[in-house]
Amino acid sequence: VRPRAEGGMWVVDGHRRRRAFLKLDLAGRLPRVPAKDDPARLEAWISIVSFEGNDADRVARVITSQEGKKLSPLELAEGYKRLSAFGWAPDQIAKKIGKTRQHVEQVMTLGNANTDVQQLVASGQVSATTAVQVVRQHGEEAGKVLGGELQKARATGKSKITAGSMRGPTVPRQK
Image (cartoon, rainbow, N blue to C red; front, side, top):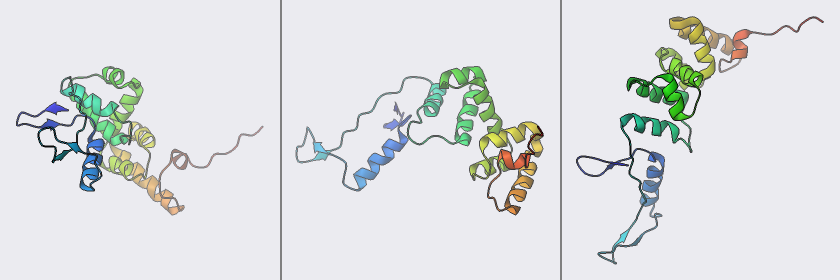
């Protein structure tokens, strides 16, 4: 957490844990202990740790602290773009989050893709990897290309675009 100027705390990391504590509290299942100043009143104590670092460090912490539910490729892209806006180069982002520069560049390509491409990824109709390949190959036209591929996939009874469906059937080599 980090302190708020108007009082209270901002949660830097642990949003899902906080939400779980709130649900337990509403259900009356959060363990409580007698208050020191009034033993008749019960309190719930939750351990918190003060965050040390700047605004860019906070963004990096959100990206790297995804132990429970992983961030989607689009959520990662948003985080990487925020770090880039702080002036961080892909190499610096990669080092901070423990990934390769190629990974960072691939996710940033998705983050900078047009909305139609991002919507296909968000809906699960195309994987992030396939979308990035199409964006690199077709640029601004990637959404149209993917839309056409989705229509072809649906015509064959499939609900999503795959790299294999885009390549078409393979012909075995002659020996």
